[in-house]
Image 1 (cartoon, one colour):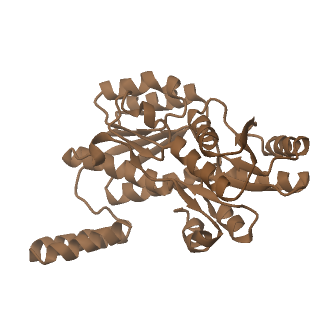
Image 2 (cartoon, one colour):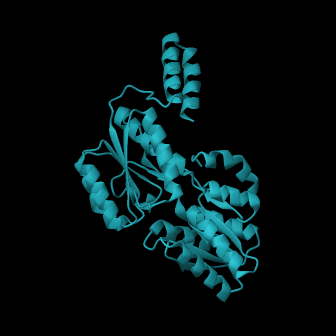
Image 3 (tube, one colour):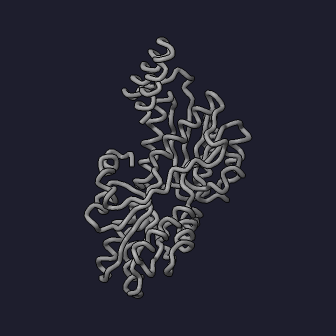
Length: 326
């Protein structure tokens, strides 16, 4: 994506200045080869998230961040922990390393408030991604990049209405994650039928499956299951198959397995918030801020979703999901 944009820019500048056009073409060529396309100092940017181990969503976020870092001559550091206090400790470690920019998630904002304030006080520019749009500005971040979780939930509710569903269960796999609560809140707000929340132990997939299966067996009126993360969608499909009955499984987020399941019909639809874009733009905006004090949107949230993805869309996106960019 960056190479294409740089090439277009180079072509435009060539019409005004042969020297400028040549330099732009050189930058585009470097970016296409995975080399730095700029000659700014080698700053260090760190990303600290609330991800658990093995979460494919955050692999995609990192892919975007790393590609932007390579283009912008940035040393990229990454740390994560599902526990809010441990995530805060990771942020403190990055502050102690005197990083030049910081990207954080605010899934558990109470645990993050003080340490983000420390980063801002230390003169480290902060951007929030994925979760915490309502707290980002209050905590002193430059901007937030991601989807509005309530709006994304509303998109799911509206899609369920179109599909004629009457009763849905919203599966929350991480207790204390405010973004997950907001997603289910949005579903309830827009869905004309009934929505029930189901809390599961997200770090234990067999337990997740048995919890969903038990819920479906105890309430045969449920005709839709909504998972809040792509890794949980296949597990929910297995649970629905074991429970019997006609239950559609839908999910937030997209990965290669979800794209495949959409194509074979085992999933109804997915809500894509474009994690690659969240990682890429976070690094790129920090670079722009350090280099030129630029900030897109004047500090207002930069939305990357939601986008409803169905069977018709999945085939087109399969190429990108396999390479880890969607």
